Image (cartoon, rainbow, N blue to C red):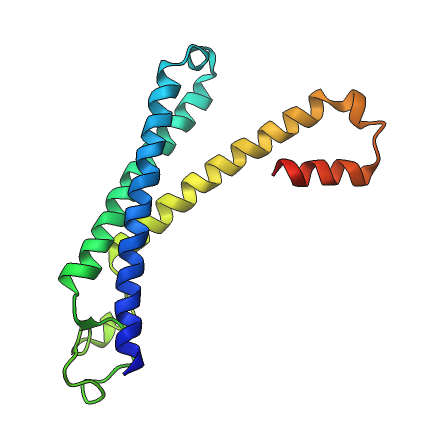
Length: 161
């Protein structure tokens, strides 16, 4: 019977994650609006602008996927067992989502995959941007870094990240 509580916990987790995603997406839209109105954004390279616009677009798609995942888990599949190892005889009061078709066992809804892929692509773009900025910072500050202790350099890079 503990597995039924686990399924409910997973549904609550998906709901909390989608709400947190919506809050952070709102903050991202505010930051994007500020970026568009900033004078410095006019001087940015086209590749940087394209990266910013693609990240906002992918986060929009990912946010819709997060909300669709929450709807799918909490409304459409409410009360259905999502785990493939449950049999109908184990929990007769729980309808198994994939009891009849062995090909459907253990599969997730497409919104889960879309949410994951969008999040990872945006994270890759943001981390790549940050690594490029760190290398620019390091290259611009070689005059004082070349005289520093290597352990100090590693500690400084760890603090910056």
